[in-house]
Structure formats: structure tokens, C-alpha cells
Length: 177
Ligand SMILES: CC(C)(COP(=O)(O)OP(=O)(O)OC[C@H]1O[C@@H](n2cnc3c(N)ncnc32)[C@H](O)[C@@H]1OP(=O)(O)O)[C@@H](O)C(=O)NCCC(=O)NCCS
Image 1 (cartoon, rainbow, N blue to C red):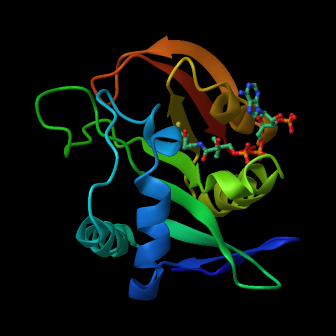
Image 2: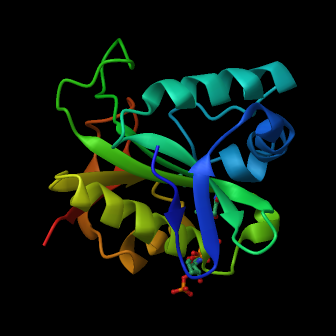
């Protein structure tokens, strides 16, 4: 997986030592409340290890899940995901459309500083550089902060969709110039 540098941030693969942080983020309702058709919080540290293993499996040199850290201190801030998006249907592990989604999950202590937008913008650029001509993002209609991140990184709002995750979402699309 490519390490990505931005002005303030370093994006790198997750490692096992990050499990406490992953659990701290994903066990919070304020982080999880808008995610998935039926939001749920992470219940145990072992789930955090499972997530990190699953994220490694997504790494194909283009797609993956990056740990977002402060470049200076190495402090963990959140994650950026670039992965095939599950189409609505009975099996949410299948992606017949082949669409790739970008997503972001940050620790509340890191919110409001523009870090999500800075990291997401860099990963979107990486996607375009790897010949992904179209990247989607879907958000819960109530998730205005996430919609703003989509806008800030240049994605276009295309209205409501029920095509993914068995959920009604706002759809944003980014296209390589
Ligand atoms: C979505 C999330 C990553 C945004 O993080 P962030 O640190 O606030 O992001 P940024 O600082 O880069 O930008 C957020 C933008 O949204 C705006 N914003 C934040 N909260 C908002 C709200 N409740 N309503 C409207 N706009 C809001 C900010 O003002 C900022 O826009 P601006 O710079 O034009 O003022 C963060 O809220 C999060 O991790 N949420 C939980 C996980 C989640 O919902 N992920 C998305 C799933 S689709």
C-alpha cells in the first residue's frame, strides 16, 4: 500500500498496534450513528483486530484503508477507505457494479480541523492516478459533515440513491479530470 503524504498528514497502512485506537473510534455512537442501514458500535477489541486484518485484505495496490496520522507526531486521527462498494441486495459482500467508494471515519477529537478533507483529497488523487475514472461516496442524508467533505474534495452531488448498502443515501461522484 502506498504511503501518502499531505501538508499536515501521513497516511499509512494500519498495524496491529493500532487496534486500541480503532476500537476507541468505532465503539463510539457519534462515529457510527450514520454508518450502514442499521448502525452499530464495535463491541470488543477483537473486532478491531478483525477490522485491521480485513482492511489489509482490501489492499490491491489501488484500493485499501489508510490510517491517517499527524505527520509530525504520528498521532492517529482516523481512517480513509477506498474500496469496492456493495450493491443493495441480499449479499452485501458482492459488488456487481464494480464501483469504488471513498469513505472517512475520524476520532471526534480530530473533527473540525479539515483533516478529513485533506486526507480524503489525497486519496482521491491517488485513485485518479491509478486509472479509477469514477469514485463514489454515499452518506446518510443527515450526515451533513460528511456531505461537506465530499463537496470540499470536488465530488458532485447526484441526489438520493438506494443502489448501495440496502440504504437510502445521498450520492456523490468524483470523476478524474
Ligand atoms: C465526517 C467526518 C469525517 C468529518 O470530519 P471533520 O473533521 O469535521 O471534517 P473536515 O474538518 O475536513 O470538514 C468538515 C466540513 O463539514 C462542516 N461540518 C461539520 N459538521 C457539520 C454539521 N453538523 N453540519 C454542516 N456542516 C458541518 C465543517 O464546517 C467543514 O466544512 P467547512 O470547512 O467548509 O467549514 C467526521 O464527522 C466523522 O468521522 N464522522 C463519523 C464517521 C462518519 O460519519 N463518516 C462518514 C460516513 S459517510
